[in-house]
Image (cartoon, rainbow, N blue to C red; front, side, top):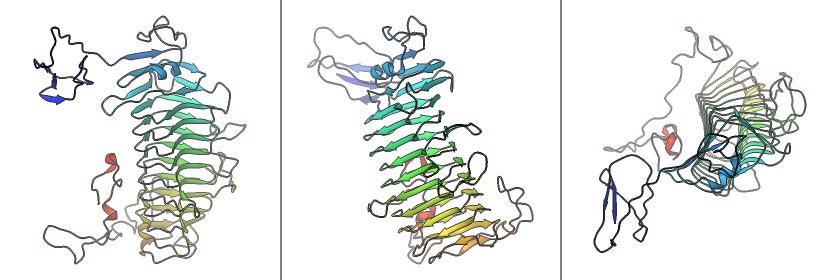
Length: 453
């Protein structure tokens, strides 16, 4: 038996019942060779199932119609049933349950869990501060979109090698520890356009939420377009985004992070572990008021650093970020062992705009540091840094929220080229002093323009 869609062959199980897994549109051609065909041949195309969940449903239903007599009652039941290619639509309401996804999708057939009306389907912990709203263990190609998740221990956990999953357009807040926890070799996941925070600004009561998005021992993950704030862990370890312990090739971009007591973005690997956090990228993030609580009062229980690398972190790139009004430091390369690179960042009116630890050797290029008492804003002992940095007491901004330069700013066209060709270039081969400036994503396909071997 041979199976084609629009003339393209697809694999088929050449034993009865001769099934082929394909989802999509196209002209289907099936060729049956005499050696394999029996006296009868039934061609039965199947469609990807759509299931529904609603608070007045029943898990004894078939889940196929959006009515009380057809829909399921719990998301967890749907998660135990849905298979590759299936979509589960969840109606408005509050669901007091924990959800464990039992099956895995494929690259062509994801399993999708989506709130029919975004931010109107609410997962609220059955017992406050316990459990996890969604748990994926070794599950791939799952999409979770449009939910509100609150009052658990952890909002969403991806673990045990859960890869290629997407968390999109959710509101995840006031969970006890991590809002999103990606760890134990879970790679190529995307967290996008989510609102992630501890207790809401202005709320009274306990402050909760250790890390907004925690990536631990996992690589090639993408965190983008999220708003993350008010993360608290007894004022000690409240981070917006953390790339921890042997987490490599991750990207954080276009995020807004503010009012966290410890670090806005923390690139951290312990000095004793020997595990590098290598080749991570942070770009186009807007970070402010780190080290302040929700009432703009200084809180020094944490570090109060906008963006940080330290210890075994190496080859971290921070570029095009804006960091302002953090209590202790704007950007810190604190005792890192690696060749980290910082360029085209703006730091303004932080306690100290920069810290370069003793013995470090980062590249700093075309950064703006201003709005502090000393014009350079450096703190600590600088290593052998590339000193093409723009450090002025008055940069002439239109305003210091978006850092648009005024027409008469001395910083206009004041930067230098990031790198140059060197004498090793021959024929069609161009050798650069540093190819790092051309890298966009370090191998993460959705972020790559040029990939360097």
